[in-house]
Structures are given as structure tokens and as C-alpha cells.
Image (cartoon, rainbow, N blue to C red; front, side, top):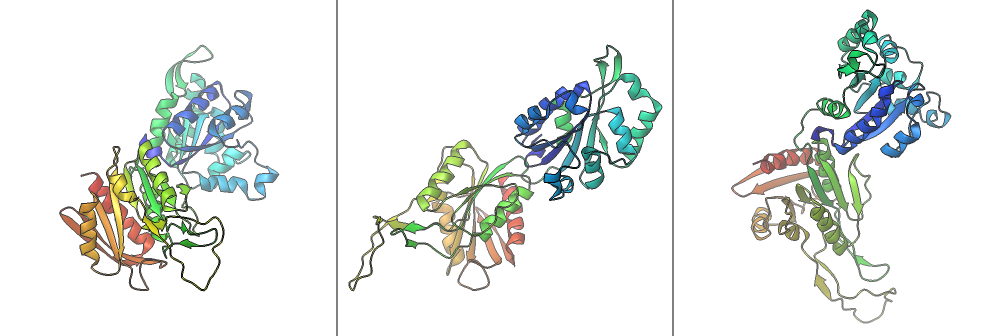
Length: 399
């Protein structure tokens, strides 16, 4: 079931008494970590209301093919592209027949034609309808096209007859939906990444900061999501879009980042990756008014900020902890010292003295160190470096 984490499931509901189970199925999919949107046929709305499914999913329910508001942005095509899986439960005999013969007269059947994502159906109908040669032919046609068939089950039906045709129970369907997806490197794990700089205020208009762009941390967050993880990204002030399916927490100062990271760790996470360039010091006093320029000197007294990654590594709910060290000289030696002194599981270090690597660059090169070993990741784009780093972390985490 953990393979549903971060997956986008479009739940199609067609007409039939089993439609009431779709509400339970929606919950089971969400419990497994999936984001669910719902499309209902006209027949489905006779058995369960769109309002019910909207309240459970937290998203508007789609019912009409020609919705002028949605069609302004080609809504049905966007839905087809959005889904990682289209799951139709219940799938009536009528809908199965229309789907098998390529009809596109309503929103749900059109989505099935417009998607290149996997499609699965959970048939539900009278046992005689299921046994009818026309239905069986339609099922074979769909199977030949790669549509997954979940069920049906056998037993007592709403009509009082006994036999095959009952929709599988929601828990069974959710488990089969999870099996559609491959087991990725970090499937089901919660990864926390901090990224970007922090800003330490001096007065309302001035602050201490550094040159970190946040690009490396954002690339790592995206790579962790692609590896199947649930990802929380704690970000300092940067001008970067949030990676798809990543939960972002924005902060400004080192103290804010410290609290946000420790709060997430206290709630529980599996891996913490500290890429942020956190300011080492902050002003002991912050003026509430702009400090005016004068002819004399201004003396600024600084106090040390808490060490976020060290505090995470000492936490009672300690995750697998990965540090970052951006250095300008003696890069590996400094990193090995931090690995030991901060009680880290791994540390990634890079030389930021050059112009074509590190801060603000789209490229990076890392030396990744752990107790008893290391690996060099040669100069490459930050997205590529992030993927390689996540692979290394996943290997070390599982040992």
C-alpha cells in the first residue's frame, strides 16, 4: 500500500448500488497516501451525491464533459494528464461496453480515451449480466488493451441472486491499485529537506545572508519525490517554484528554520537532508527602526545560531541524517570532521570557491562521505547530482 504515497488517482464512479462503496474506497486510497479526484457519471449520481465525494476528497467532483469553466483550460485533457492511475469503481456493464468500443460521450469515457496512464476497473453488476457473452467479450477486449480488471467477487447480490459480479471490497481494490506502481527506492518514506539561505535581521530593511540559491536542495526534494518518498521541504527565502507533490514550509531566519525542522522531525520522518546554508550568527539586538547612516562606526554584536543538523542528529526521534558542507578549501578534511562531530550518517561536501559550481550555479560536484567509505559525484547538472545522491542515501539508509 505504501506505493500509493504521492500518487494521483482519478476515481471514476459509474451507476450501480455498489457506488456507496466508492466513498469508502476513496478514504482507503487517501489513507495509503494517494491524492484522489473524482469523476462521476450521471448514473452514479443517482446512487451517491457529488457533495459526498467532494467532502471526502477535498476536491471538486467532475461530472460534465462540457463544463465551460473547465473547458476554458481544456479541463478534461488536464485531468487525463494529471492522473497516475484512472480507477473506475464500480464499473457497470454499460460503461464497460462503451469503454470497450471506444465511446466518448461523457467525461469519464473521454478521459479513458485521452490518457496514457494505467486504467483499472472494478466491475459490479448482476451475476447474469457478468456471465453474458457480450460482457465477457468486452472484458477480454479491455484486457488485451492493458486495462487491469479488479474482480469481480462472488456472493449474495443486492438483487438477491448469488454468483460472481459483486464489486471487490474497498480494501482489496486499494491494495490492487498499489500493485499497479513499481516499488521505488524510497517508497513510503518521509524525507525532510531544508534548503536555501536564511536572513538574519539587523533592522527592518537590512539583514545578514549568503549567496545560496536553494537550487541544490530543491533538486534533492524533487529527486526524493520521484524516488517515491513523501517530501517536506523547509525553505529559506528563494525565488524557486515548489517541486511537484512536495510540501513546502517557508521560513526566513535561522531560528524559524530550526523550529520548523525540529517540529517536522518530532512528528516523525525517516530521512533528514540538510542542504540549507543557515547563517551561523544573528544580531543580538534587532532595531525596530532603520539605522541611520552616521559618520562614526557602527558596531554589530552577533550571537551564534543553533546548529540545526546537529540537533536533528541528537533528537529522540532521530532520522537518518545527512549533512552538507560548502567549503572553499580543505573540503574533504572539514567534511570528515563535521561527519564525526555532528554525529551524521552521511555528509555531502562541495567546493564553492569556483564560479561554475555550487552557489547560484546550475551545476554541482559532490564528495559524499560516510563512516568507512565515500563516493565522488563528478560535475553535472544539479538535477542529475540530486538523483545520484538520493540513490546513495537510499542504499545507506537500508543498511
